[in-house]
Image 1: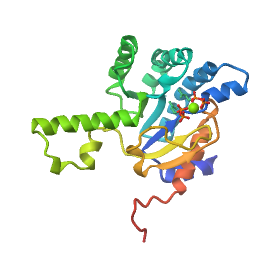
Image 2: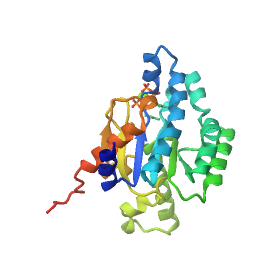
Image 3: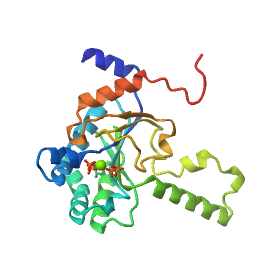
Length: 243
Ligand code: IPE
Ligand code: IPE
Ligand code: MG
């Protein structure tokens, strides 16, 4: 363990993203309903956020509900829509104590007034905190995010405040929902699936990808350390040649 910690600390990602996958399968393997997996999955966001903060990570983005997850059965969607109030109930005190700042990314138009109110309050309350930033991606999808960026650029071009010749990758990055977070260094997906499922497509351009067979409710601090060790062994070249 000591050795593990030393390796990890030699090169740490600033910003980690996790696709929290496998809640349903984890529960079903135990003869429980999928919602039980979601319940344990929500609890685990707290555990892993605190672990990431302890390990010195600056930002953690978690994929909690995708723009495509509305296509699930109504009961399951209804359960997943209780997440903001559960975050508030379960995370509030520990996050305050640990100086953790919470932000949300995603579409707002399909969420209930009540959820928007809770999410806005959580974000406002934690706004000036200086610890880890937990970015909860809720009704998030990259196609939606990037469509919004293109729309805002088109409007600025139409109004004459932006000229098409000046549009660069920076023009796009500075309009993303993650614009205030460090660049994404490491993306982890649990549950053995090896795809991005419309998560942080632009941001992941040069992120290191780690896939683990562990289902999200069973993912521990030790699994996070293993992913960090894997990250620290990767040679990030960004298209260049290392001398
Ligand atoms: C991830 O677990 C949580 C959400 C998508 C909200 P899943 O619900 O996708 O679980 P599996 O992949 O079906 O096991
Ligand atoms: C991605 O997982 C969305 C979240 C983790 C919130 P899914 O389980 O919805 O993705 P697919 O269907 O396996 O691609
Ligand atoms: Mg899944």
